[in-house]
Every structure is written in structure tokens, then in C-alpha cells.
Image (cartoon, rainbow, N blue to C red; front, side, top):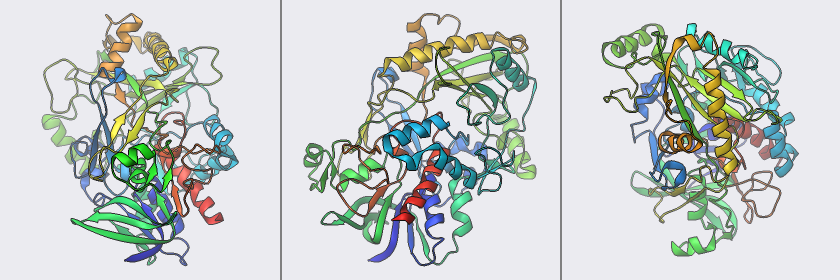
Length: 534
């Protein structure tokens, strides 16, 4: 059995950061384990290749959720990366840091190591932002971040309409002020190529002799001697292999997969483990519980000018845009999934912005003739709208069998806190006022989703349930906290055992304001400091 000092399970946003930082100490050995392949596929690096990646089971997990009210009793799909770089290799490439209040709330429940004071320094270290260094923003870090170059009458009208709503037009929409604002969405794209965690953190250090990257290996369980983690067991090329960990196993499989690894390893609800014939190592019913996920209302508008991407991803235009991309690194194939961001208050008395609208220069084909791209043939734009940090935290993710290749049972728990649904209703009405502001109003023909006929609360919520989308920002399934009921302690150590930590979005008790890719990298950067402390 091969042995290493640290065994990292999952080569995603957290795992790549940890592999980089821990292997910087040439006195230790590090193994990074990934279930999927390497990140060499050209669709990974071409930003708009994501549309093709989403249909590739070789590079994506297509998890199905349980039916519930929040998805109109129709299972929806949670997509996750199955490739080196994890979901950072297949996501929409937006860069949202979260706000100081998010991290200070985490510090209140999980200790001062997670305060904004520490996390802001992590961001300064990891960001290589086009805008250069600034308050809590890094200018020379490994994650290269750029702003959209596609700026048109439509994008400038969106900014101008936001200003008329009283929202500041921000150069950096991540400015750490907890406030409202509108502006261009930063993205993990540099010179036309995706900047995944693998590109930023792993590829530059792949040559280190003390770092071993193992792909195509599905982690089944953690191995224990008594209650001490001593390695993992994986399935690779149809065979079971064991990989030893002299110091620690670091579980970075993500909020969907990490609770399953713990449960198959004997850590979880005793009744669930008994049903699957898994010997108990440590009882903790919180494993797989406390799950929170965005449910976003999709809104969109038809426009009267050719200012969207809708026609760029089909037919001869698509062929030309792919050729253009490979010749110049520019054009519609080089853009992120979202172009702009607005943050605002659902009610004036809120002490900080509690809604985000991620604005894209495209519109979905909901009811017309099918298109290969999934977009309308007419020009339009959209907004994906949700509370930045949902109050709903009652979802769950648990193993459905002992087989590590079988997907878990996922109950999303969308909108179980009525305040989330009330906030989304308020946000929909605010955005309807927003698009009535000039010069944006003159570009709009009509609203196409939810549509002008959807005026009542019931109609708007029914549209969200039926046509809404999961944010793919799952957290909470291995919740961190100072309380004994949490899954991991403030140093991310799994309670009840030794030599095992969880380091990924699953440990976050609540979604930081917006998206999770950046926050997970910052969390992992900070976690490396804690591991070094012992």
C-alpha cells in the first residue's frame, strides 16, 4: 500500500489549493485523489465549452434531486465537475467573494479563525485581479480574474438603470461594503481561457517530487485504526486499492459527495448506517443534514436590438465563433456564463443587500421551437435572481446504497423558510421597476419570463418552482461549528475521530453572499494555515 503524509480526496477548488500549499513543504508527501480524468479536454479551457461539458458524463456528475414543492414536484439536476479542477473546471466562471458580514457570521458560530480579517488576507493572496490590488483584493495571486470586454448599449443601459434605482455603479462588484451595487461581473477567465483551480494552483506545481496526482479513482471510504484515520480505499480500473495517510486524510469531495464518504466510512446517523450494513465508527446524525441551496427565479426580456448572444451559438455563426476563438482567443466563445451583477435590498429596512441578480446577455428558449443551443432565436437578456444567503437550511444528502458509484438521495429543501420566497417575490417586483428605467426601457419589447400575465404572488412563485434553477452552491452537509452537534470543529476536524478533516463547501453553515467557488478557495487557503498549526 502506497503511503503519503497527506491524502487529499477530491481535486476541486479546495483540493487543488491544499495540494499546492501543503506540498510547498518538501519535507512532506501529498497525494491528490480525483475520481474523474485530467483537465486536458479543450472544452474545459474554452469558456463557452461549458455548454458541451454539461452533457458529458465523463466530466460531469448529473445528480437528480427528490421532487418537492420548490421544484414543482419534478426532480431537477445538480451538476458537479468530475475532472481535475472539480466544478471550477466546468462552472460559469463568475467570481463572487462574499461579503465581510458572511465571514463574521461564520466566525460567530465557528471561531475567529474564520473572520473577515483572515479571509480577506486569503483573497489578497490568491487573486490576480485585472483591477490590481485594492482593499481585500489581490493583484498578483495565482487566480487570474478579468472583467468582461463585451460592452454594448445594453450593458451600459443596465448600469444606467441601476444608477436610477439608487444602486452605485461599481468598478468591482465585490467591494467589501455589504451594500447595493451594479456592474460587470468578474470572471475566472484570462486571455480567453478558463482559470480553474487546477490551472491556478495545481498545474504550476505538478512537477514537485513530493506531490502525486491520481485520477480515475473513486473514493469509497476512509480507513480507520480504532478511531484514527489511516488512509482511504478507492475503486480504480475496476480494482480496490488502499492509500495510506501517515498524518491526515483531507476530505475535499464537495458538499454533495463528502457526506457520502463519511457515511460509507461509518460516521453518521447510526440508523442509516445500520440499514446499509456499515459498522459504526462515530455517531453523528448531522452528517448530510442542514443542506442549503439557492433556488433562483429566472426572469428574461425580449429586446429590440441585436445586442445578445442568442444567435452566436448555432449554425454558421457558431462555426465562425469557434474559429475566431482559436485564432484570437476572443469573441462569444471566450465569455463567462454571466456578464453583470446587481445586488440590492428586498426591503428598505434590510441592513445589507440580500438579493443578487446575475445578468446574462442571452435568453432561454422556454416555449418556442427547440434550438440546439437552448436559447431563443430572438434577442433577449436574462436575470437569475435569488436571496444571496437563503434562510432555508433543511435539505439533506444521504447515501442511497453502500455502492460508492450510486448517486445519493438529495432533498433540496428549497424555500422551506417562507422568508426566502417572500424575498424572491420582492426582488421580482424590484427588477420589474429596474427594467422600466431609461435608457434600458427603450431597448425592451416585453418580459417573456415569468411574463406579463404573472402578476400575483402565486403566479410568480409557480414560475420559480417550474422554471427556476438550482444555484449549484450547495453548503451545510458537513456543517462546521463550535457546538458539539456540528460535523466538524472550528479547525475542520471531524468530531469523534482523529486524523480526518473536511475542507470544502459542505462545512459552511450558510451560503456566503452569492456564489461558492471563490469562498471555497479562500476557505482552503485558510485551512492550510490551520493544518500547519497542527
